[in-house]
Length: 196
Image (tube, rainbow, N blue to C red; front, top):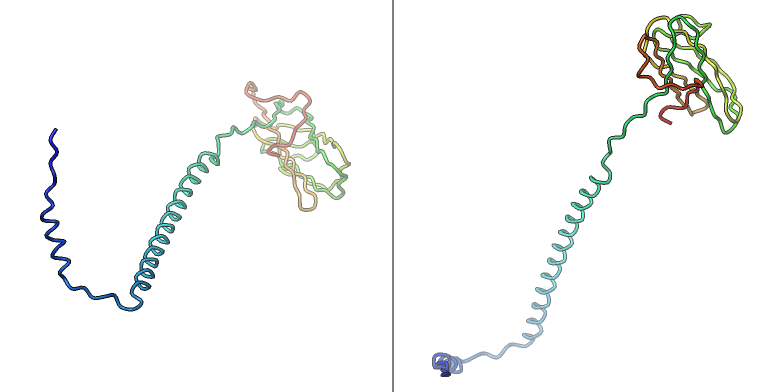
């Protein structure tokens, strides 16, 4: 294997010419100014680099939070529970029981019963809403209601209990028709709160 020496004659000639060029000596404070300028340029570049990195990181974190939040916080399709229901015969009295549970006695509570068209409350013919003031004891309070269907109906009886600034709604689906195969039946006629 043959080793070839590089030809440095052009480099050597340039070096010789540069040695002949007269140079001025640097003035007083030259080195201090040069170091200060180099440090300032370096600090500016470093600050710009950190700003760009921080800004880019914030954008990336925002995108990740948006994606994760979209997956975690999306509302799933939750089936709405069916209302408890009762089937009643036309023109026949049918008793249902609403149960109001209270942790403490409630004096001066207002109870309102709202009826669908075609259902009446015994003793109040033709009225769509009946309201009165009552007191509830601590524990379970049973309210028997006698309903009468005056015509075929598929509706909801709403019992609204209000006391002070609070209210609670109880709902019961009532069906009076010839076809009662698609109803949910409660054998005791007891209605639990809907949407509590």
